[in-house]
Amino acid sequence: MSEFEPVIRAPGPLGRRMPGSWRDNLAQAAFVALVCFALESVATWLWARTLEPPAFCVASPLLLAWWLTRPARAWLAVLLGAITGLWLALLGAGAFSAGTALLLALGAPLPPLALTWLARWRGVRGWPPTRFGAAAVLLLAIGVVVPLLQLLWAALWDPRFDLAQRGAFLEPLLTQTAGYLLLLPIALAWLQPEPRVHRGHVARDFGVALALGLLPLWAWSPVADVGHWPSALLTLFATPLLLWTLLRFGIAGACVALLGCGVAGVAYTLRGAGPFAALPDAAALLAMQAWLCAIACASWLIALMLEQQRRAAQQLRDAYGQLSSLTGRILVVQEQERTRIARDLHDDINQSLAALSIRLSYLKRQVGAAQREAVAELQQDLLKVSNDIRNISHGLHPAMLRFTGLASALSGFCQGHAQRSTLHIHCNVQPPDGLSEADELSLFRIVQEALNNVEKHAHAREAWVELNCVHDQCVLSVLDDGIGLPARASAPGWD
Image (cartoon, rainbow, N blue to C red; front, top):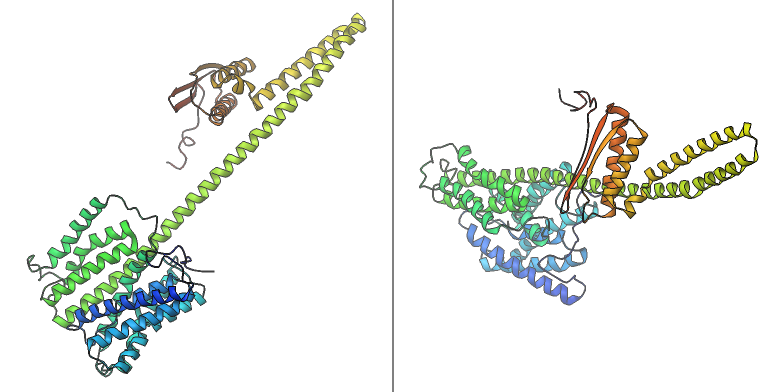
């Protein structure tokens, strides 16, 4: 069984047509090559002064998101386009020969492709994860295994990697890990927009995000003059923004906010400020990357719990809807069966009793005076049975409700119920307008069941039935002067 939802849905904002011809594949490969070249050129330029060697932390998460949301027949075209784009970007940097640049470009997209293939082979086909086990495996794969494989491949061909140097992999590994943890959810949300995300109140959301985002920007800047505060306390200034975006927009929104905080934090760190200003420059930058990775992992886990809660609530709503639909169908079948039984009682059994009464009348004229009184008593008993059957038939299916309306049907039912019992019923019913037959039948059944319960359990002498309707709103009340429910039974679960 799959632990993720299937991701092959309607195409996202890129690639509206499903790849089926060589032209589609060629166009897709060219687009991927252009995107990889542009992103890696910018990333190399931005990070060249702070990271040696520069880590490929932009294109790989986007490629992984692209492969996760596309069928397998498009993978080869994307792979060739990615290799071409990365190779051109490395050549443009001027630090590698053509052969070395090609080998490095080969190592960047292959681990994400292998992860996608393994996920498909194991039946894991989607996003977001729905189980903690699957989420832990995914975090381990994209946070450690895939970045480490990419860096090991780069170390084989890039002479700037010194494997003997302590911590040589830590800074590039954190950069790669942060790139996957932050960019993968954003790319997946872009390629597969969720229709459940509420898109209204753009101005309000922008204002809230701006207000919450200014808080860490101010606290981390030299203007705030809080550099002597503990780093753990300074990082908390970003918590309101991250929690609000996570709850409002999901993991993708939280990653966008965290990415903005990370860019601002790195910029402040390079200028001697930021939440880790008390550390040396290299250590401060390393601490900033570690903080980004830790907060991203925590956001993933919180998003997983929120997704589980959302799906559980949706399953509960679906089950409630199915139960309501089933209850409605049961009530319809019950009313149909009541109608059939009432018709059989009225048309068949009552007619047979009427025929027996006629025969008894004829027999009464034929017998002598001694037997005539016994026949008359038998005829009266038969008439009572006929009246009881008629009452049962009308209770099963009130014909007056269909022909005279709810007000007359309720009044007639209250009068008949009062005649058959010692309960005195006050009936005040306003003729409702615009109610459907199903609504009128439901109100009649409620009154019927309520009065039966009053007679059986309340030991009441009087009852009041009121129905007030204004437009399409009706208020039905059934009151009695009986003994009521016991104190503990009236509020179960309360002491």
